[in-house]
Length: 140
Image 1 (cartoon, helix red, strand yellow):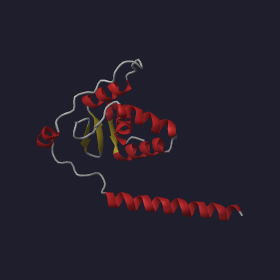
Image 2 (cartoon, helix red, strand yellow; image 1 turned 120 degrees about the vertical axis):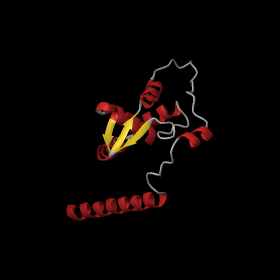
Image 3 (cartoon, one colour; image 1 turned 30 degrees about the vertical axis):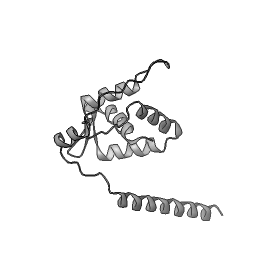
Image 4 (tube, helix red, strand yellow; image 1 turned 60 degrees about the vertical axis):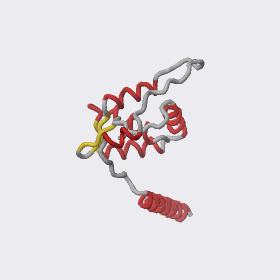
């Protein structure tokens, strides 16, 4: 599943394009567990816009308690979802130069550090293992 595309899709589904973090996380969890179709679809859409970055390209803005999709974010999503004949070449929208982005956009702290992400992944794995063991014990 492509995180960037999924966030755009979720945000445009909310009124005004704003979703509180709790809602965003819940919707992400639902889509992440919905199967291969969603993962394949988001990968195909992301392939149409290589180098997609929600914050540095100002496709999404952080607001108090949540995120809001910008008009530019909606336009990029429409571009990704536009159907083209198979023979037509894939146009690539212009992306700002990295130096220009670094000087014009404020520093954005990372959403989650890699060590925290690994710890949460281990904890989820452990909870799933324990749940399987409880289910086996209850079944016998």
